[in-house]
Length: 243
Image 1 (cartoon, rainbow, N blue to C red):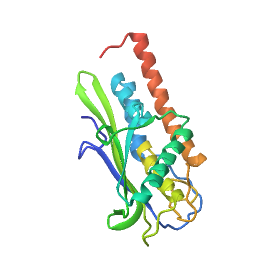
Image 2: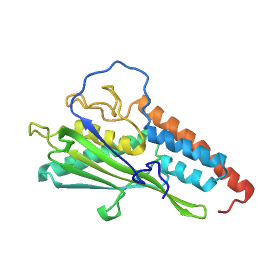
Image 3: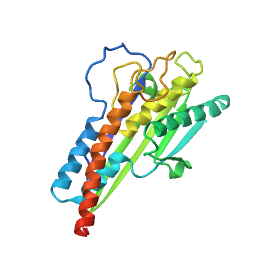
Image 4: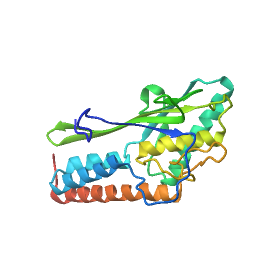
């Protein structure tokens, strides 16, 4: 298996949407995860060294060429919250689908078939702290030898349906949390700014779709990966490349 995490062999990150945070003045920062930048670098190096299939595998992973098959589990929240929580998750997915012009495909499936599992709980904590949600995901490229590579993306998202005081989470807050965690799966980093879906959650002022800056940052990284992929595909066509 070929991965950017040399210790575990799997890229595994855990991040959370916090309830509160101090507002930050706008400042230059990279919204794209460092590991995504590193994967682009690996793909470019593979292309330049003639390892076309490896480069394509990494760009496929960055571009999420395989559809995201997701499931939603509401078993652990009150019955009356289940439909609204599921609807909020769907709206978050729709927000990303629209933002990326349908370039990333999401399909709801049974849990056993899902590579993204979304689970609702009345209480969600990360490292002992109350959070609105958190995501754990894996991006990895398997090296099977003889020029055969296969990318794999999977993740688990936990979202809370109750505030720390026991009130129902507002729909907008759940959408914000779900959008935030899906953004991590797609390759975005946390933003320090209120007003960004990748930023802190304000329960009374949730953000229900990614900002132009967030979409632009992700699309810029995706465009670089797309250019590498297209170059590799052209080389394969021109040279009758076989691995």
